Image (tube, rainbow, N blue to C red; front, side):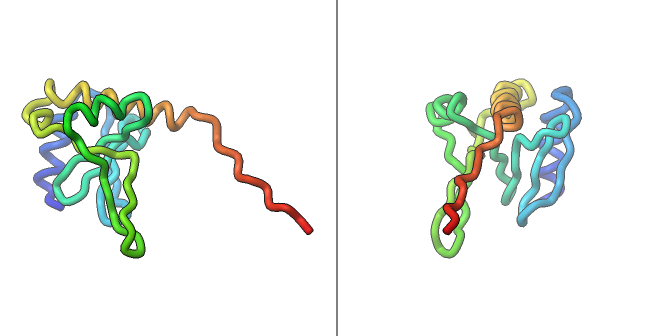
Amino acid sequence: MSNDYLDYLRDLMTGIGTVTVRRMFGCHGLYRDGVFFALVDDDALYLKVDEVSRAQFEAAGCAPFVYLKQKEPIALSYWSVPESALDSAEDLRPWLDLAYAAALRKANAPAKKKPRRKQG
């Protein structure tokens, strides 16, 4: 992944709050005001999607981030952005806001309880 692409994305994200980048699992995680809302892999941006925002990403022709785990494809809740969204900060902003809102919903959701193991 090129630093030039990360710098380009940072420029597009100017004005949305504090965006930090952290290396993770061979790619980079993007945090907006401390909330993980995007990832970058192979010079491609993927934004957090949930059941509220998924339809908008699907309608725009976006696709989920997929990786292989033991030769099985695993799709994450991070989706590509339309190519045209990367033309300007103004074009990207609505997609960034959708992703941040999804990330906030996830962060504020009650933790799922793990099923209890039966004893005996």
